[in-house]
Image (cartoon, rainbow, N blue to C red):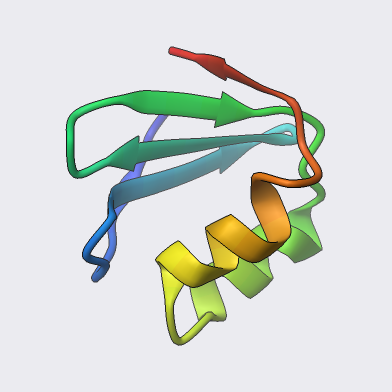
Length: 67
């Protein structure tokens, strides 16, 4: 999946395709969050703090797998 770099102290890059949100964290780990709708991805990219958005709106609600 193609990811784009983001300004965040915890997330290095973000990608989204067909409901899969892929996050590369600054520690090098890559996680794929499943069944994430496009509007949620858009809100993540528009958030003033990507890390806070992930912690509040992604991690509690979407299943994930380490990529």
